[in-house]
Length: 460
Image (cartoon, rainbow, N blue to C red; front, side):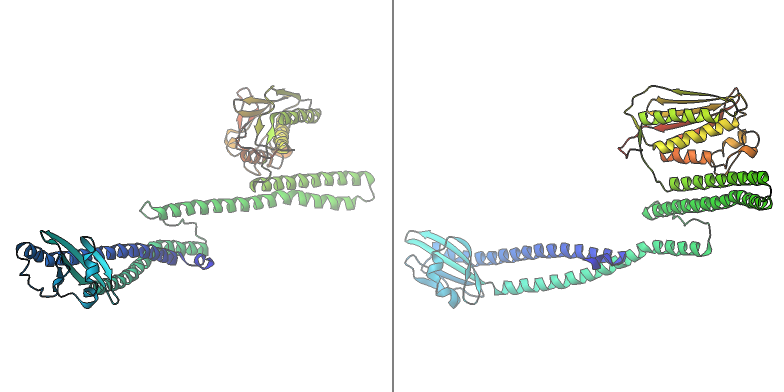
């Protein structure tokens, strides 16, 4: 049946419609023929009953004066003694007349060597005994009529199927014409690079719904392509500076070959540039894998709270240089609750938010992180005593390669990917992340992740 799958929709709909019509027409023709056959038999029975009725009257009134049958009706009258009083039955029936009189009153189909006969037997009881009236009719004429009816039905059904198939083809063609126009329009848009959407018809039908869905899909693809293009452009811009700086530092190192101290300084600065490039490349790969939907895992509260405790140790080590106070608050909660985030990704969220807070906090400042279960959600908040964010920057804080001006950004800022990675991880976990300036100064970053609703693979 693979050839059916290769057919176009127009052919499939036409052939399917013709097949269904053929089944219905065949059933209707069969029923109609049966009805016609029954009508013809009933009509023949009525004729035979009408032809035999006068003889019943003659037998009762003057049995010795029965006129012979005339016309096309074949009738025989048999006396109580078995004598045939009158008869014009055909030879095929006359030879078996005695057998016919032994049949019960009513109609019968009797088979003869060359034809079938409809036989009506009627008994007339008298004082002398039972008289029998037998009327017969050759069914070959009925068979001819039914054969002609069958031929007409077959020819009519074939013509109807042909007309139905043509109508189905034309209607399907008309129904698919808007689809063809939509396809041609899509080809024009692709060839011209136009940003116009596909036309949506005035009728709110399946075609309009398809056009709306395709427009949404095209818009999504364009948005993704534009985002990827922008990301490549931004990444190229971000990589250009450290690569150029690294090249200069290596050139300076060549010039400082005779000065060991200067050479060591140049190599140290070159290593820092390489580290920056490595971090940037790692962040780009992380964002790429998150965009592709990789690493969808779940972790228990126990595992996540253990990672939170480890992050506190890392944060305190980083805070030593600036004498920043670090506080970590962990709320006791049920250990068997699962959240749709891998522990490695949770560690990235912690490290990025805490490192941003440590960079923004002033000397002897404060950073506070809290992890708790709030209803059916995991809630992580990181507060710092830094300068906060400009109000007009908060709306784009999670965009890639964006850094605020002033104390939170500037020369000591990161690559502008940290918060973008946080949002990508949290979004892949069906959660939400927000940043807001604190009334008393500083910034609060809040992450909420819902509990897992379906079983998922467990994170490391």
